Image (cartoon, rainbow, N blue to C red; front, side, top):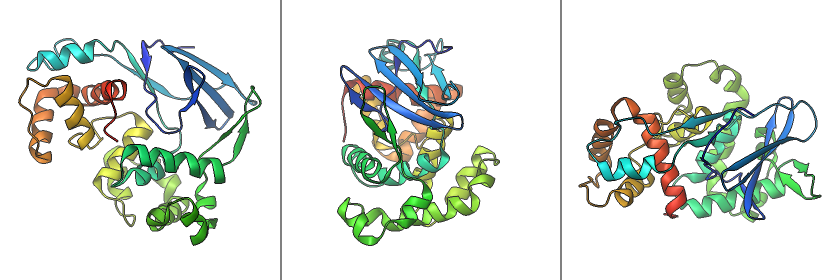
Length: 268
């Protein structure tokens, strides 16, 4: 196993509580793989098919990064090496970002998990339990208005259907685009704007300078990690401030700040 991290980001709603840790099933082309994280320890188990490993990346605080804000640099450096799995499905990354639009993170996570439990493919686990994968775009289009309403997803119905229709028509081409072009193409879909497109592509690629890094999450965690620093509250002003502070390490600092936040609280 080539992954050596001090901790793993498990903020994504597909990570479910399991004993004293969390677990997630990745639907890979060679077959499903179970990932389990207990403390800083990661275990991967093939659930049939090839023993493929889901794509992951490691992030550590670069030397000298965020030097203008030593308190932030100290907090992020204290995380050690942070591992995060990429979302292997562009479709799921896009749909999950849609679920996150407007509403609180906790509510979005609840909606995601209920959708998987009720309408996702169920994967048998070694302990006898089952794990619900995220529904395919075909399944999303099969659901009627009543089914969306039963899940509390009536207000997400139009966006999910539009995304599913667009993905089935253009998804394979999207995967061949450059990342900036992909973000632009995603925004051509009804009800998908810059935040949704950027969050989806960051989740899919672990390229966090594409994430909407001036959003409430990054602003909140930066402020809590370094409360003595003067942070701008205005989104545009903070974005410029964050770009200047991070410089060439924008992707890494954004990911580490979100990781710090996932360990130190919940903004909902």
